[in-house]
Image 1: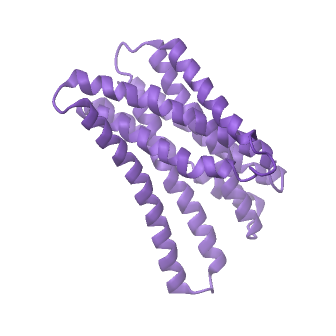
Image 2 (image 1 turned 60 degrees about the horizontal axis):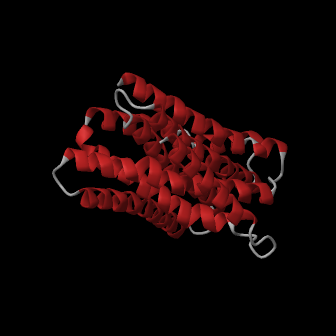
Length: 266
């Protein structure tokens, strides 16, 4: 069981490292190529949508049916909705805090407010992503197949891919706000540090409290779907007029790649 928590830690350290790579773009470039970022965001959203079903919801249904008790459809629906509501509430909390800060300080510290809220919003957004990876590894248990392990790694891969533009999305605006390159990079990569912490917590909960496993898997799926649909897909479609199908093909390719891995190996 300790090995599963260690694997979750290593995987989320990897997703944090990709965030740091994205933040490092501020050192070398004024801004990354929008076309490449759109393709990466689209691919990551496709991976996350496919992983939400085959690597999270499907195992959640199977484990809920095996456990008995409440109907599997009720367990999975509750967990899924809780995950989506958690992400929605997190976004609302950030918006509320920003408005309160603006009202209290007016325009005197407008630049500082923008910096704080940018870092806070991305950091808060990374918590359920870390939980999703941790839950995926914690759910492996003893005697899990190589296919299940591959599924957990592909979830970490999908989250890691979309962390690259997230790191850049923090560091580059900070640079435009007047922060030094070093400070912009430091704050950008720091926004991903919560993922290893959340990953370890998610894995430990699932390992030691098996009864919550179906709920936790569905919770992670709900959080991932909301992130993909509400944030990643609209973001990657910004240049849809000039390149109507470029980002869309990234979404389709990511979904197909994840589906291929899960169906072929599972």
